[in-house]
Structures are given as C-alpha cells and as structure tokens.
Length: 79
Image (tube, rainbow, N blue to C red; front, side, top):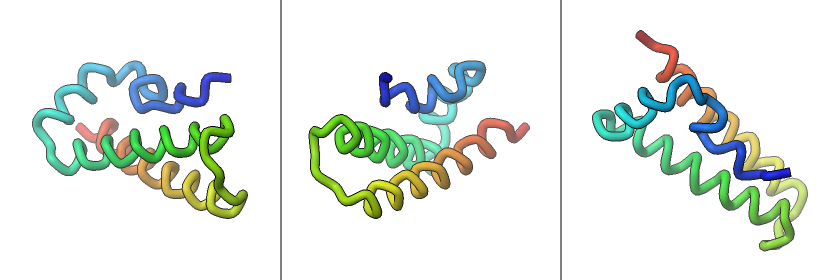
C-alpha cells in the first residue's frame, strides 16, 4: 500500500485547483498544508520501518494528521 496516498491532493482530487490557489493566496491554508504534508511523510516513514516510533506516538501523530485534514477539508468546502 502506498502510504503517501494520504496526501491532500489524493484525498481531495476534485479540489486540486482550489488547493493550489489556496496555497498561494492563504497563508493559514499553506501552513496547514505544509504541516499535514510533513506529518504525513513522518507517519509513512514510521509505518514502512524507516524510523522508530512507539505505537502510542504513531497513533498520536495520526490524530494530529486527522485534525489537520479536517480543517483543510472545511476550508476546501467553504464557499
């Protein structure tokens, strides 16, 4: 399984253009996007054995990733 398929564009393919526009025009969205991307890569590394992390720490990071994704989703779905 390709764990990086949790990237924002793969999660929200219908919003590809809006994601790009928001990254350029909205500093808060750009920060959320960057934080999500970095965390997603860190989680993928841990899940593929590229880094060592306790199960508890991994679950905590996944919860943070989910909160970031929820906020990004709200921004993408806003008019």
